[in-house]
Length: 229
View 1 (spheres, one colour):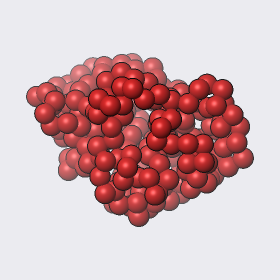
View 2 (view 1 turned 45 degrees about the vertical axis):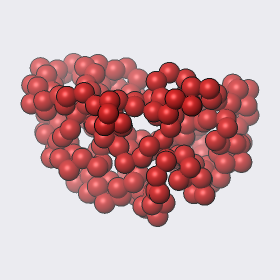
View 3 (view 1 turned 60 degrees about the vertical axis):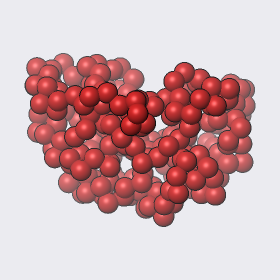
């Protein structure tokens, strides 16, 4: 695994659990608003963290940590992801995976082997806006396949959309909610101008709290549990 960052403890990454967080290095999307540019832009990469050191640390945290959250970057493009997850599960930790859904084959294999306890997938936009948001020619058929796999999986899951006002309007968000209708939960993530991949996003903003709450009420007709985060 190419690991670009490691957080020893988090109270927010895995809902209802205390977790460590592993940040994979590298991503196949180039979302301008990405808040982890050091994990996406090769020009900003730091030397990788030795996987062995992370495993040694986790071995000392049995009974103290509940889980390990694997995020990125995009973990599913890592060829060693599955054996890495197997090692963590063998140590007795629950595993949460954050993904952009671009690699349904990997998601399917992880689910089939019962290696995941929670999966969170980013839905970037309605299909017609995917290339604009991701900065690449995203294969939306693969994204749709991943959505289907997650909706059918018997584990906890959530879908998430980062709301940038100039990029996504309320109609776009409603389109997304229909795509994932019946999901366990949907998170509307406020865009916050901190570190970003594309500097022009430093001038962007999210919808107002009032607009997000109104949108949440509309989405609840499609999805029972909607969160503004």
